Length: 126
Image 1 (cartoon, helix red, strand yellow):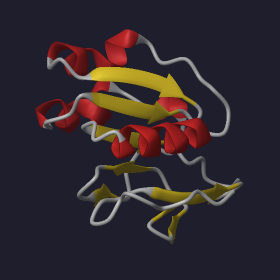
Image 2 (cartoon, one colour; image 1 turned 180 degrees about the horizontal axis):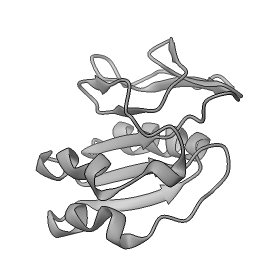
Image 3 (cartoon, helix red, strand yellow; image 1 turned 90 degrees about the vertical axis):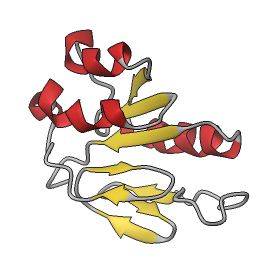
Image 4 (tube, helix red, strand yellow; image 1 turned 90 degrees about the horizontal axis):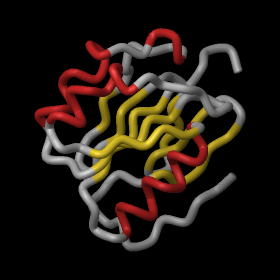
């Protein structure tokens, strides 16, 4: 699916996604990544939801964010709040959803001027 890039000049925004990738500013990514408005962490070493841990999210707590969207892959998955407790302690809201929904939500929040990032799990082999 193609997403429209408007109001995002100079910022990273999702421009589409498919069964095996997401696209940021037109560039496809096929491995898990973290997207901030000003940079991309690629690869993010979380190949599947069961690999998500407090350590894999630890560096995000120091970021000036309002909200982190965690994309759990192509299906919605449960993430225990202990996994992202450091983010809550840093007053960063966390929303967990499937990866495609996280892409769409990120763009909406970015367009609103919110301080948002998306940590997306892209399962290998899809």
